[in-house]
Length: 471
Length: 167
Image (cartoon, rainbow over all chains, first blue to last red; front, side, top):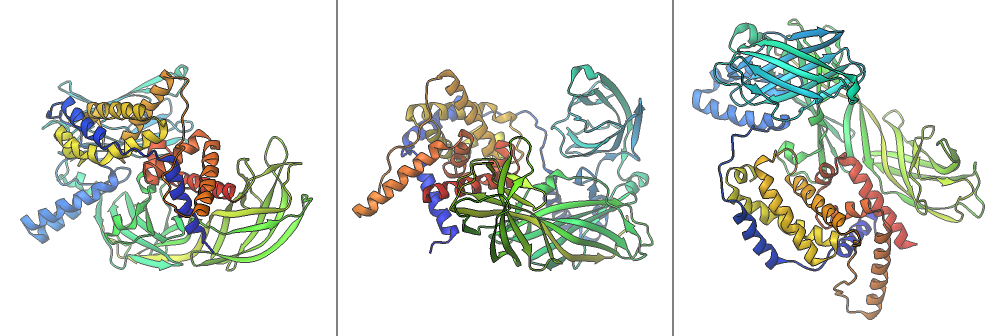
C-alpha cells in the first residue's frame, strides 16, 4: 500500500506537470541575456552601505579573528578581541575592536515619553544605534518620522536600513538601526528625530534632539560597559530527541546574553525553548529581560549551523537576555524545563459516522500514533458544537492523549476533513482545530480525516552549566 | 555572487543564468501564453538590472526577482482585462499501455479540474512551489508570511487535492 509520503510525491509531480508549459525557451533566453547585459554598461556602483544580518555578523567576525590571530599571535590577540567582541543587546554580536561608543545610555523625557539611546557603536564599517522608547501607549512604529544622526559640520546620516530588530511590549519599544560609518574624527553626534505619534495624522508629532558624545572603545570606562563573549565547554544536551546547545555567552556588567540553538529531526517543524531559567551557585535566579530577536526566528538547516550534512534535521536559534551576573557567582545554570513544538503528522483514517450523525455522537478509535519519539493515543472522535461566532457550526473533535502525560502535553491538533470547504475552527476545550460544517449540513457515511499538524510542549530538563567569565 | 554582480554589472550574467529559466517557466505557467511570458520575462530582467545597484541583499534574491515578475504580470493583466489565466491542456504522455493511458488521462483531467477550482492565491502558491521550485523560505519572504504558515498552506492544499482525486 502506498504510504502517504509516496502519494504526496506522486501528486506533487502531477501538479508540477499540470502547471508547467512545455516550452524551454532556450533561444529566447539566450537572446534576452545579451539584451539585458547590453542594456546597461558596467559601471562602478556608488558607495553602498554594507548590509549584514546579525546572525551572519558572527561568522564574518570569526573569520576576521582567525586572520588576526595568525598575523599577530594567538594569546595577545585573543585576550584583546575577547574583551571587545561581544553581544550588544538588540544589535547582536558586534565587532567593537576599533571604534567609538557611548560611556552610558543617554535619554530625554518629553510629556512622560522617554527616548533613550541605549548605545551607539561606531566602527569603520558601520554605526549601530540602539534605541529604547518607554511611556508610549501600545506599540509604536519608530519608522514613523525622520530619524537622523547629525554632525557638527552639517553632515546628516540617514538610517541605511530600516530597523534591524525590535522588541515591543505594551509601552516599551527597542529598535536597532544601522547607519553609514561616521566620518573620521567625528566624536560628537546629535540624534535627531521628528517622530510622528501614530498612524493617524491627527495624532501629532514630537521632535527629539539628543546630543551624544562618543569615546574610543579602548577607553577603560567605555570598555567596561561593553560586553565580552565566550564559549563554554560541555555546551550541549539531548533529551526526547531534541538537542539544546549554548553557542555563545556574552557578559557585561549590565547584562548577560546567551545564544542558544535547538536542533530537531523530522517530523518536527519547529521546537523552541519555553520556561527558561538562569540560576547561579548562590541560588539566585535571574529573570529574563523581555527582548525578542527577530533574526532568531528564521529556521535554518542544521547543516548551515553545524557545517555537517544532516538532511531532515533543522535548527532554531534563540537568544536570551538576563541582567548582569555578580562577580562572586562561580557557576551559572541555564535550565529549560519545557520546549514548545510543532510537528507534521500524516495519520489519516476513514470514520463512518453513519446515516444521521448528531451532536454528542462518539466513535471510539483507540489508535496510537507517534510524534517523533512520543506516542499519543487517539481515544475517540466526537461530533460537537463549535464555539465560533456567527452561524451555528458543528465539527469533529479528537480526544487525543499522550501516553506519557508527564513528558508531553498537546495544545493543538489540526485536522483536515474531506468534504469541508469551511475555514478551520479551533476549539479551545479540546485543543482541536477542525473544519466545521453548518448545522443541518453534517455529512453522513464515511469521512476521511487527516491529522496534519500537532503542537504542544515537551517536558524535560535541558540543563547546562558553566563557569561565568566576567568582563 | 550578488556582491560581485553589484560591483560589476556584467557579472549579473551569472545571476541571470541561474534565475531566468525559473522566472520564464513561472511566467509561462502563470500566463499560459508564450508571447506574453517572453514579454514579461524581458520586462522583469530589464527592470531588475536597472534597479540592481540599489538592491539591498537581505534574505533571498529570488524573492526580490519574483516580486518584480509578479508586479509586471499585474500590469499586464490590468492592461488587458479580458485575458484569462489558463492551465496547460495537453501533456506529453509517456505511457504505452492503452488502459493505463486512459486511466492516467482521466486522473490528469480530474487534477486539472481541481486546480482550476482553487482560489487564485492557492494556485499561485502551488505554482511558486512546483513550477518555480522555490523553497518555503523563499515563498515566505515573497509572500511576507511565516515559513511555517506557508508549509501548512501547501500541505493542506496537497491533502485537499488528494482527497478530491480519491473521491
